[in-house]
Length: 180
Figure 1 (cartoon, rainbow, N blue to C red):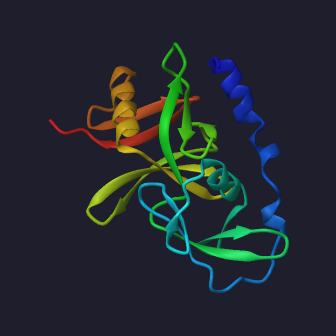
Figure 2 (cartoon, helix red, strand yellow; figure 1 turned 90 degrees about the horizontal axis):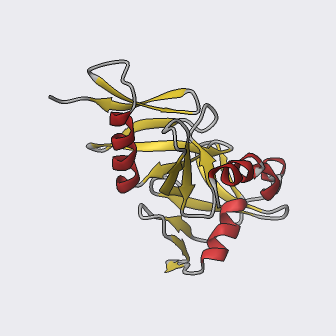
């Protein structure tokens, strides 16, 4: 798939998702769902290995009052999330090194732009890069992708000697302090 096809598919993203923001069923107790730091999904302590099932679940995921839920019109299940439901595992960049498309582990691609902002968050002793994926649901950027984004930022024009910034879709994202 070429970059313009990918961008077009990204722009039609809302068509793939049901209106979970309109659904407010009762919470279903006794069901244990978890997404760990490696992006693995678990049901009742057992790993969910089927990618299609995880992708289906990701499309009915809702973030509400600081918690994640799987939601249907008739039930709502709490999901314990270690970092974020999505993990950014790859990227594409156009030939001018100006526009970046991030790819998640759950068959979703998003532009790194004003609606999908990159932000560094301190968790414990480490700074972890997160990006807004959809509807207040975040994804964390894998270490290898983050290092690649740092390499891209080093090739782009830098407005500051002390801070490293990444430009994508005419937005500037802070990647942290530069050390001598």
